Image: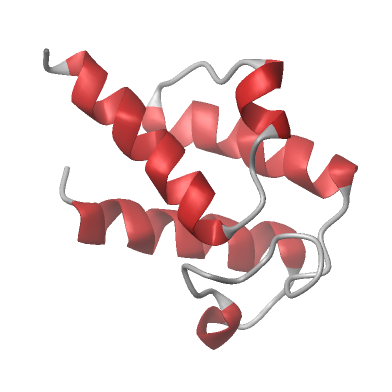
Length: 84
């Protein structure tokens, strides 16, 4: 899966779960401040990431998520680890 594929899927999840517009989803967008997500929203997004990408995110990793770029990087690390 390419970075572009991951970005598209992450965008789709954020739009669906947060009720935001696709153009609001930028790599530097802060999850809480720019996208107005809270800790419950983050938990829902992480659960959706786990389901869609077949990964298991630890609580510590989820706590480190601050931006959309962090979410994409997290998924990329799991995708890369899968093929090593």
